Length: 564
Picture (cartoon, rainbow, N blue to C red):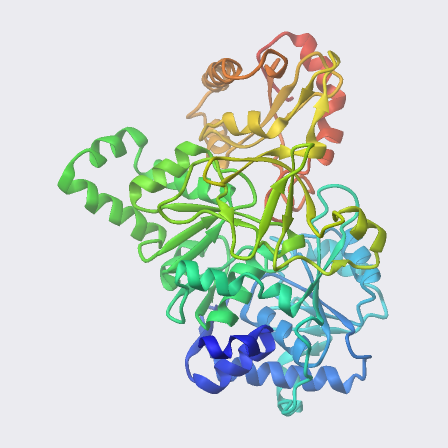
């Protein structure tokens, strides 16, 4: 959109109407289905379905600005439903497809949702089987394509019964657009309120700095219920007018990537690590080093690896939500992919800090995005004032006031520091600090970031009220499979982890030295509540599960303990 039009496009409704008018036959959304079909939806078709959905919602006579839930995995119709809610003058409340029944119930009740739109769910890779029997009995339901419920109002039937809404409800840029409930790593989730203005607050800066255009492509597979995907994919594509592809399942991910061949790609460290391990499984690191050292062969091999990953067309790749080990970042850079770390929170719609191409400092999340101000307070906590700063927490004015400074900065809860060029490094969470029995404070995140091994998928440093901290290790899937097959022994892994423990302890202060490492027997997942939907660990859940055994492990006197 041109500069003189920007003032009119501060909300995503106007963005949709703009593309519907200017390029109606261009493909916007590409959706693969379980039966092998791949369906393209043009801007005209997306707008038509959203208008028809809005007509239905208006026919229900809900009060203007009512909250309407969307529960399901990413799909073309997830975005279409979101647009329909806005066109009808209502507010969308996304729910993660991995929420447990109690949390889903809480969000629907707290938000006073008038209706729930059910999207793509299957009961095996999500928590539908847990949630389905705990939905409020009087809550009306609408099923999108790929929904598990066929006995309620069907979206495709509504498309035949309702004419497209011609006069969409006009929304002020500062009107409430969505309530995004935090993933609840501690306590009950809070509803973060965003307006149309705060949702698009970072988009023009991204267009200007990164050159985002209508010709870009993205693959949507991280949960749209989280602000990171909502900002990077949904909001970004509506603002810039580019095409979005969806992934069908984890098993089809590589095929979906190759179909999309994205030019912009956003992922989280756990998945960047999985891609890295998958290539290492096919081409062992020792062989990679040989191939990368041969000038003519090197370029061919690297191009082939990126093509195999579906990443050969990427202009820039983003990583966020947690730190990515430096050796993995360097590996991608050798392939020709400069990973740009980003930093943001639900409260600022993910719009806070960004690494710029050519200015990356590994371990840092970049400098403030356009229009963002940031500072470190006297306690070492990062405070941010962003164009995307939330309206507040839903029904929690006192909590909102508590998290804001008198001059309008949001208290992030993260500890950080800036380098001479203004790039930010996150050093841990303020509330993650714990005290040992010796009275010394430990910041777990920096120690966890040092414990890098392709054998390990997730780590957690803990140990409050113990003489020294210790670390919990969750093995990667490949490592677990190798142990099960007998191609890898516990003794070998014990020796590797003992060596790594010694190496890490040599780099930290005496009070931070890890007394031992525990290899946990269970997988930590979103479904069992140990990880948030962005795959960050829930420390309170993990510590409640494992701390009761800490003293017994300590008495074993082993450097590496295997949970039985």
